[in-house]
Length: 116
Length: 110
Image (cartoon, rainbow over all chains, first blue to last red; front, side):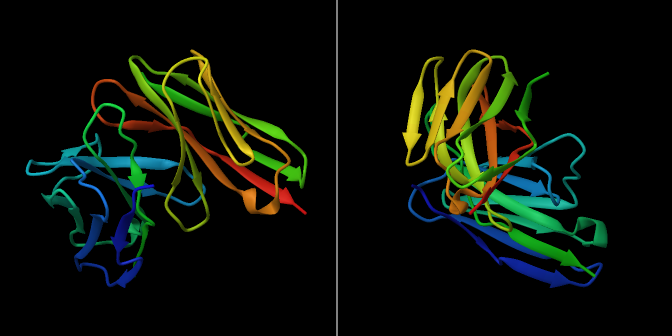
């Protein structure tokens, strides 16, 4: 199957700092990438959808100024959590899919963010 | 509103004890029904995509089936390494988003 990587896998930061998470599709071109957030023992919550070269589409209730998404190329998307606070601590997971109506979303391994 | 509901929430099985997980969906314009496996602290791992009612797919001890209203994931003679959370998700024909169910946590005891 297709491989999606995320970096870093784990990050601890102080309140008020910004954190950038990278998501890369390693062996396919991802026309669309997705960012999810997952709380303990809960399912995935979609935060935003990004298409290469265009602005991300955010889900209702997700602050676009707080969670900056850039999809600079067909293999790279970044999520920047700006001015992070303890309530932003969570497990962030990206996924990527190629073009075509039947394409599957493949997920990265996730990034654990802890804001102190 | 699109909805995906999984049951049961948790399932404890003895090794070798076959069982089924249910995924009920109400999604207009279904593009595909996806099954993923998620281990603790990791991202979901793709298992199957089902596109039309009556379709079945198999992988080792797992078999997924699809009807017009629900999908089942059958686990035959499970082993402890099958312990994980199994997620189903519905993809719509319009747009690329997936709607996820709450997942079923499966624990297989030796």
